[in-house]
View 1 (cartoon, rainbow, N blue to C red):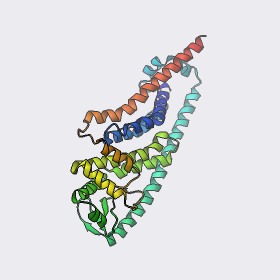
View 2 (cartoon, rainbow, N blue to C red; view 1 turned 180 degrees about the horizontal axis):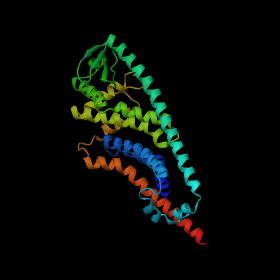
View 3 (cartoon, rainbow, N blue to C red; view 1 turned 90 degrees about the horizontal axis):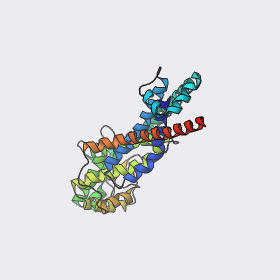
View 4 (cartoon, rainbow, N blue to C red; view 1 turned 135 degrees about the vertical axis):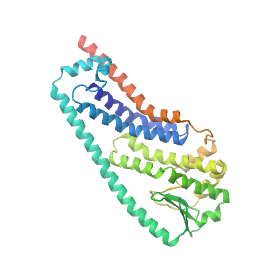
Length: 318
């Protein structure tokens, strides 16, 4: 049971402590690297909790149980001295909680995806009637509207909705930047990433990591799309297009991703301070961003339980 306890403590550390660290990364590293860290942390919580349940239900000693008991001796001794039914009760309770959490996530996912699918299909049917469409891998539906507006809708295929106001208010390079930004959302599957974060936040609102993820990830996907647009044009062009479009009093569907967003100030900061880093992180950097959020809490959990074990030894010896 020591191995399972270590895994659960590590999951708790990740769920509570990681949001502050991840948010602090937003202005310091590339958005794709920060996104990798967010996704790695979210997956890590499920991996640690799932591993803890497997260890609890494992017949006999689970792998690595002996090594952890050497590091956490007193707690291991107390575990062996406890009644066997205590461990069984903990295992069953953990399994029930894990199944309950999984069911909550599945219900939230089914509800949100069904609702969004209906609204998205209706939106597309209405837009298709009144818009002229430029075909392509990511079709563009042009609306005859004077306000400059653009947003992307995921689907099969995803598409971009843009207004004739973009053509009237923006120059050629700025138009290219806006469309590159929206295509980056579709090609990067940003809608799906945001949707998953929102489903988890809705299903498990008592987990700090999950509740902090949607707003932070929304900022990161917008900054990531800005980087793609800047690579296709320039940072100055993206900044100019963003400033012009953000002044328009236009709306977009809440579940769409578009150039106008609540993160406009943050994105302008990235553009104004030259935060668009020219060099791309290597594969090793991405691997570290995905793995470290898992390894560091696990190491901290071992240290914390070792300290608790040492304190338990001191009490037992007195």
